[in-house]
Length: 505
Ligand code: NAP
Ligand code: MG
Image (tube, rainbow, N blue to C red; front, side, top):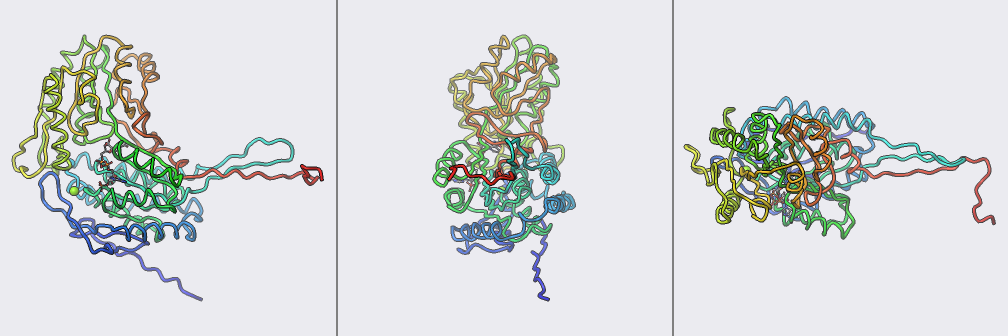
């Protein structure tokens, strides 16, 4: 009897000096031999070197994913077995929780408390999809006479998944978990600035029993590798999270081969704080809504509308607490706000703040790059609140993607709904009121994919996450995501005793 050769990928420490590409179940270096260094944005220190994928590597990864999809066993596994592997991925991640958290903190400059929540959610995403896929199935449809019709869900195929730097591991989980659950193959392109935890997750997938070629990871240039994947004729789907301009470019390019596309893009999400809100809770929630993850969140609540009767009270507390936020040691659980991802991003944030000042706005807190003792080589920005603004200002209309909130007064419900909806984006919104009827009424009128009522939390495994308008389309993190990684096949059969002869010949 022939023996099956099983060469498992060697398990390496989560934190190490060098990270490779993973193609066809193997750790490989770039064909070009190129590598680059990733840095900790909080300290400016080097974290590790990473193989930098070339076009040739991308081609190999696409072919490996195609081969695994067309000829491999993953999509043919009984669904319970795929679920078992997803649960195994989660349990390995759980056993390396602290190491994954530390690596995420070092590579991204975020705080340890933020990273802990995000790594935990990434784990729970795999557990969620392990359960959800078991119930994901087709229907039997009503048919006339002797006909019978059923639908079945089939995996869409090879998926290119391109993710940003703000939630490096969580975004990788949001992408890989539903794709694997549905039976697809994946080529993941992490953000160049934060590739490390996505590489480790891909290694863990192999350790847990995902067959070779089913998940491939290609750290490398977005404009080269990302673009190559989007245009590739044998890639069936692109799932992208990132900025709106690149999302538009991807949609246009993917249309050439009619790839399935899902886009999770930018936002400029509002908080609506009504006169009957619990002001303390609204202040605390708004603080988290904008300054969590250093404001580098697509769903950051960066526009805050406050009813005129509680405006002064709200602002006094909001400014006071903003000034108490601690920046600094990202590995200390007491630090509230982490670093900005890069020098470019820091300059972008500051230019938005300066433009608001030039337009006549008033800075109530922050307003400039922060000097953090002991972290002078990192990129830091003061948690910032800007008042005296209006909807013609750039800082109010555009996504800043940093720790900057704009605050405005409103008089009544109708006015604030109009203000909230006056944006090209529509990702999330938060409503703060004790009046449940009002909360529901306003939630119905708001044009955003996510509405939070009296809570700053926007995403749990199972809750659909995605936008209206130019925030993109498609929903992640939920049962319906599985449909976006599936095709529905309709199978129609005839069981009549008399053979059919429609032309009557
Ligand atoms: P980005 O510049 O759009 O980059 C996102 C990803 O796309 C990166 O992996 C990037 O690679 C790659 N990329 C760049 N150019 C590309 C191209 N021409 N073709 C294909 N891929 C390309 O965005 P970012 O600056 O990393 O992230 C911030 C943005 O993402 C914000 O606007 C934010 O709102 C949005 N975001 C949205 C969500 C959501 O769920 N809606 C979540 C997180 C972030 P490189 O790293 O090599 O450039
Ligand atoms: Mg980095």
